[in-house]
Length: 285
Image 1: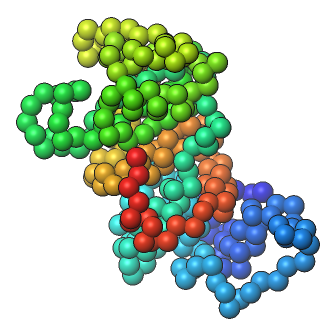
Image 2: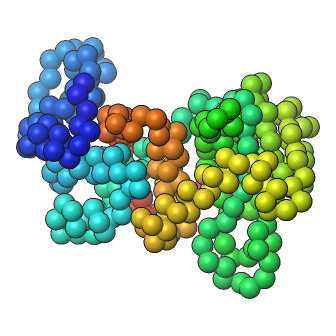
């Protein structure tokens, strides 16, 4: 299936709603329509029952901008670029797309896996930095350390950095039998070995030393913070996890940038319905 790699190619491939619908049908049923109930091959399009009030072309633009812009796109910029009359509509489209990008639970990290935490947002309470910071949002990362680069990563917003929270995150993202977890000497990771995880704690001593023993975790955090500041100028804690999932999805597929339009569209087609009321009511993390 052809994938648009430039905006000109996008315009040529999707000049109207019919072209968008035909492509969407091909993504949803690559081997032709099959009824999930009876297995029938015949189908009819009900033109009176539209799936969305927003033109498909706008949705396709959202997929294209999210997939092809390395830095992503904010809802305000998306509204301006598409001419949407409502910021809420632009925000909803992008968040529905982000919601479909979360990592598959069966896809586990393997090999040497670095795990670390960082904080986002301004400190609302003066005091210590790092793990003693108050009023900031804690984020934990697990990233595969390869010989010359990072492998896949997982990011999550966490309420605290206790063993219960950190242990649950680590066990949920790694393949216990095929992963070695490397952390600094923080006591919140100490019980990992007792759960059957191969744990390699290294006492860091200084911040510079931490960057040496967990280089890819620090690289991911640095890129994440730059991305959020540069594209969104800050995001709401309530919806932060979706932004992490977008960043993580693109990070894991950074060698396949030209194919991301198809990947993101396929995820969106298979995603669950998320009306605006649910999007705004959800507390993710």
